[in-house]
Image 1 (cartoon, rainbow, N blue to C red):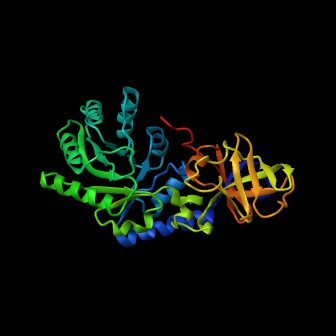
Image 2 (cartoon, rainbow, N blue to C red):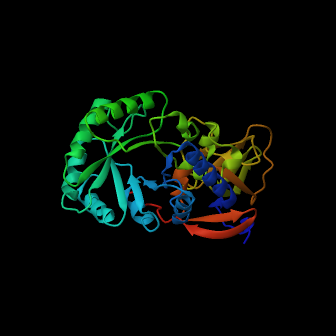
Image 3 (cartoon, rainbow, N blue to C red):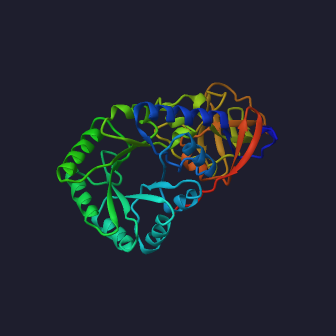
Length: 349
């Protein structure tokens, strides 16, 4: 089967580029003594999780229990970087913790209390890392003193053990300053801090400069996207995933309609102009998305596309794109080697 035989819209993934991306990052982590704990929310594939572990990852990161339940098929060391709240999720967490070496994060005393109540009668304690907000403005304790307070609560809670600190993204210097002070306070209180975990693909090649961190969680690097290219974390040649689309309409000489709309391309802009990079056509901008329509316009004269023509698009943000398709077509050059099911697609709970 050739790429030209694939119906559209579809995801195509260049396996040679993926392998190069995985090896390059693992070699970097090995060189600088950084534990590589890749985030699987980007690809959601059992096959690539297995490969990341084969190359030397210490474990994986998942965002939701549902993802972790799927990846427990191939991974035995899983960190879930999300507050686990509510009876249903806590029971699933207990069941998962009986199967794999599991860690979670928490940023509030009530979250820690819920985890302890769920785990108090289990044989093995659950490792809990304190999530720290080092400037991103999302989850996390707001000061190093709060990290100390929560670390103490975790250490004193039945069924739990304090596992360290985590933040997203790794930032220099505010992130390193925050985490360094938190580590100092916690160690001064007599608690070890075995893991200080940072994250983010745009920050990954600076990870060795953030000396306080001994683990990094990158996800997008497996595929890369337009955003990682813009942030200089990758080159266009490092982008392994493309959305394959067909020209479905030519309303004007300067406009074409693609069969890849918001249900195939991420609507994230990241401050960029347009909704993706059309390979081979730098003058073309995808200016608007409807559910099933991608509106492409040329900024430099008429667009010489014909109805039925295929184009490949590097999305702005690849992670949500993976969650929009049931399958990915794995290619080498112009041949489809295999088709992988996106096993963790839709596992949002």
